[in-house]
Length: 113
Length: 111
Image 1 (cartoon, rainbow over the protein chains, first blue to last red):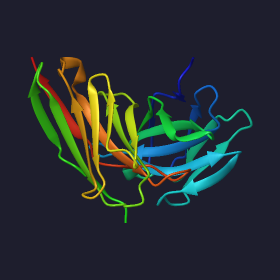
Image 2 (cartoon, rainbow over the protein chains, first blue to last red):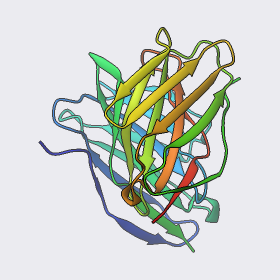
Image 3 (tube, rainbow over the protein chains, first blue to last red):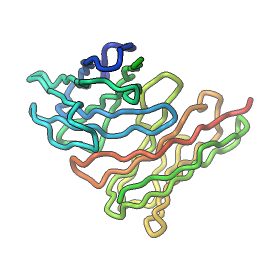
Image 4 (tube, rainbow over the protein chains, first blue to last red):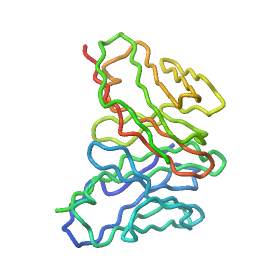
């Protein structure tokens, strides 16, 4: 049973550029949440997708946007990258019947120079 | 508001018990979690407890919840070097609400 997968593993971008990160949820899961984890910090909630709609959003600017596809996979897009966007981006999936059980992927390490 | 606090560092000897503590502020929290993160990796869900429980045991792990004091602890029995990692406490008000994490406690196990 494949767990949550994310791609790419690492990414280096320049300030002002745009980036797209991808996530495939655990088999049987239909809800995807995205988190940003800065170095030495706990993960911070960005947003959650269910049925291809953004269901909930944390305190992140509109530069952060997302999408969920019919197969439940998801993308996180960040526009106009800032140095402060450098972080580990984590995707977590869960299923509607057990929303309190979130399983995380290995993350994508984004470095903005 | 939501806030989860943890101590930053804990050092124990191999074979001893480890106790990692956490306090939270949201009295409406329904689910409380412990996650483990090894270097360069994502988060592994270790265990969670519902707010109507006082204790949960799962093999070497024991979770204690004191709702009155909003205090959560994780006890790891017979700590091994493989337990060295960062442990995150987290809370969830319930349903589809977001999960709020603490800053993490780094557990160092000395052989």
